Image (cartoon, rainbow, N blue to C red; front, side, top):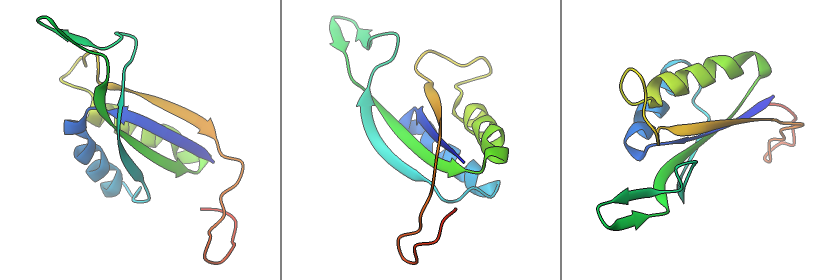
Length: 108
């Protein structure tokens, strides 16, 4: 299993969630977060913003579905045809085990 954490622009989050749902990936977690990337924030005029709002979308999928989910996320969250700085980042990690709390069963 893979855990995919995508940090996307807030205005793109619902579209990403809708596209995931449409493709059969409905079990997700979304959290509003603040952070900065390689650009170290944003300067607008004389004002510097070192924490930029993002939405974190987290999903755990079977290994065979990871690339499909990543493609859905990147295609949806990208700004315009070429994308822009600040569109976000996706991190993928291994999940050793998933356990359902209500019945103790292993797996998704």
